Length: 298
Image (tube, rainbow, N blue to C red):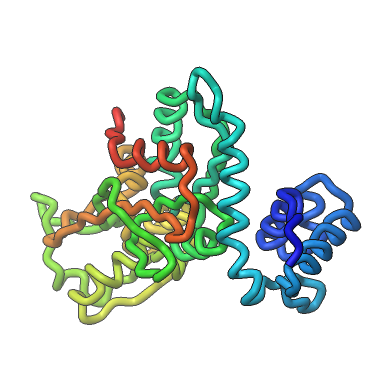
């Protein structure tokens, strides 16, 4: 194997893994498609293996590419760390790609990132919000550096540690009949209609794990992929909803929905995920440590 693999070639390689086409990768790197193609061809020639399978004009990472990806990601991260190695003020440098599931991304991450920026003066973070399943898939594929999700994953390639907790709730339309003390028994929820988040959502996973097994008969009226649509559907009388109190509080205060006190433990944990093979740069280590010691002032 030749010994002159360049950082540029590795950057092209990792970018292609994220976009799966030469055209999209070249646009992301601000290079010509020909330059990206040449860099990949030279890398594959030097390594002596194809790194992608070509399927319908798409480049799909193969087994050899999967071997290279963790090392390429580490080398690029270490190269970025060199920039700040001799800085006298020891400021953090590099880009931090954060993924967050819906509740954390919308209700927690903005305050977490604001405090992190104020504490470290580091400004270069990106935040991608989706459901827990997609966030985990992106972390496995090295498209993210770190993930913050509501439901624990058992993915063998990821390490999970708790960094905070949350409380779930059940919401109902304003005219839903409740006792004067607001209490309700689970038998009163028999044959109820439910508005749920999509498959892969932490909120949906919580409902199926904690609430659904305790109701013999229930029906899924709608499956929605945004929390606000879920709240509006409940407000319109289409069914009950299960979501984080952080997400529901504003609608409860506005009188658009009511919260049903549940005779169940509605607590859940927030999890911080990193790839087991991911090189932890000084920036990533600092952010992980900050998350574990962070106490919101809201």
